Structure formats: structure tokens, C-alpha cells
Image (tube, rainbow, N blue to C red; front, side):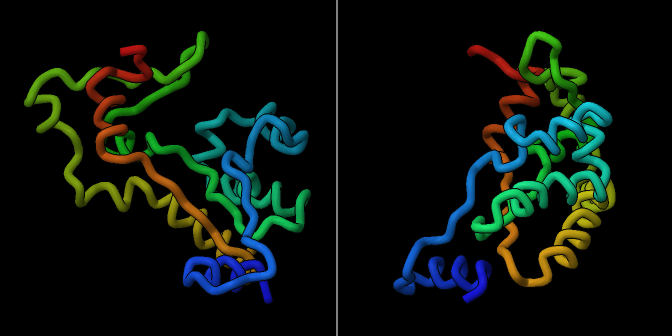
Length: 162
């Protein structure tokens, strides 16, 4: 049974000798190969560059072959960015959006939903690279922020204590 088959069987509630294994935040500071790549490229560059995002996605699977799934290296805030509200990381920690959504006019000025697929082409290109790399052997997991979570970042102008 391949890792991908194990994952699909678990989703179908089929009894297994062991459950599929993946680790949330698989790509991250704990991997030396990630830190090496991060020293050369910013987080946002890695997210927006398909070859780099695919590399970061694959690093944990290369180091820990027992993992059954890859987790797409991306960020939930690519959606607001594709709508026209960019973001950056604050030096003191947290996220800063380019502006707060405070008026109806600002909401109306966001890009239409029809523009989002093209603006997120890099995500589709990353997925194509990963599909080829994974070759059906491992499951690929994605993630997303709920509309509420994204809206709070957009309205608050970034991370907020409130």
C-alpha cells in the first residue's frame, strides 16, 4: 500500500495497520535545509516561486520518508493579496496588511473574483510541479483560511490582539 493509498483508505474509514502520518507545519524552522533556503529567499519569495515552494514542500518527505503526505508550502494570505491587499511580516512579529479595509469603497476597489486565478497562477504552477514530483506515491494536502479569518486580517490591517 502506498502512502497515498493509505491516506485515501483512512478517509474512506477503511481499517488500516496504522493511520497515515503527516505533521502540521511540516516545512519550517526546525529543518536545516529550510533554514538554508530561507537565508537566501524571503518567506514570501518562497511562497510565490513555484520551484522554491515545491522544494520546501518536499523537504520533510525527503528527510522523513515515513510521512504519508506532503503539505503545500503557501500562506492563507495569498487570497487577500490576490484581491489587491498585499501583506508583509512585521519585524516585531505578526502580519501587516498594506492597508485596512475601512470603507465600502475600499472593498469595492478590490480585484474581482475573476482576477484571482490568474493572480494565484504561482500556486497552480507549484501544484503541477508537486504532482510530477510526488508521482501519486504520497498525498498532497493544502490548507486555507476561513473567510472569517481572512476578513479579520483584512479589516484589522493585519495581526491583532483584539
